[in-house]
Image (cartoon, rainbow, N blue to C red; front, side, top):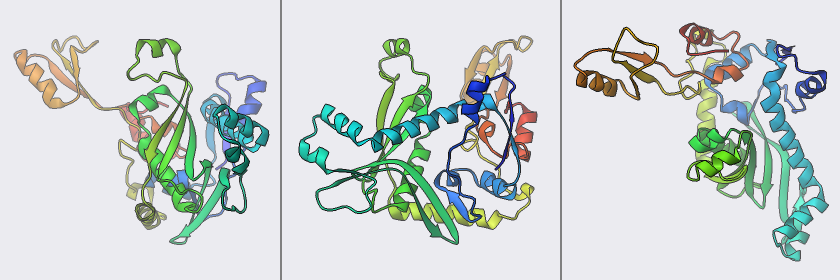
Length: 328
């Protein structure tokens, strides 16, 4: 997909050149879907396919998160390809000489006793006339590792765990000879970590800027069945008009929870008396107050559309904008 850039926030040329540089190795073959692409909703996948020549307007300032993530991935790749650096790190971990001598980065073949490390390797597999392609960050002695530069709150609420598991499972399905473990290590690098908050909240808040968390992967059979089902849904709708496509659900929209606001004095709605997670709870409070006031349902705010490549042509997004649930 082509991009048209704007600079609404007057980003300097020094930063703009960096932010506009996209080094990702896109695959332009018509029958290729990436592992991360499969995680998107059917609506988004189909619309993107139907409008692959559409130019998306992107403001340069909105590229900061993705470029920071790319920079971290590139740095990690460079670090692992520097054998001297790897050996120094292993010494810090107290690794025996036999271990350091056995490390092989991106080997073409492995002999018994060697420990393979695969960095930024791409794999692909064809299924149902579609090529699934994926590039994983790091495989260390059979264990898949992924770097995620993200908000602290993503970690606290574990809001992306399902996608981490799906993505990791697809990578293992693509490279079962290299990814032999049944877990994925997500290496969190927090973009908004605060030492002060860490001191205040020692239970939920991460106590350091970087944390590794383990997630279980699906079996190869489960993964292939999920991929097959997703492709069947996609292929059945690939030429369908937009009005026949399923709408993205609240999970796919990254929608916040619906809130039920109770106003004891309906004449004053500047601030609710209390907010509730369900209508029943709100009505119970209203009843306890003598059936005065009013309850207002406030649907959750939608966030995913802000990052969607086809938001400019999506009728669902247009309706969400009109309803106030989406702000671009």
